[in-house]
Length: 71
Image (cartoon, rainbow, N blue to C red; front, top):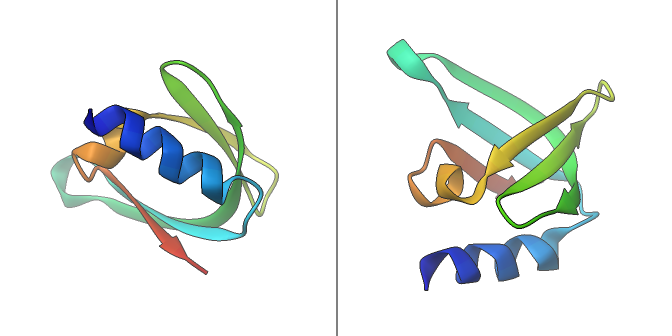
């Protein structure tokens, strides 16, 4: 299943410094650096460089609304 592959990939990246790109509505794009803090059944949390905690769903990664790059 696709979500299980995403969860496995994110588990292996937990604690690493990564770059995130959010493709929002109306062609708004936001980029930030941070690290994956926790993984839950439906979501995962990311703490950015400004110590702001953000949460995303695994489907955000599948649909490419959230793209994760190695720093």
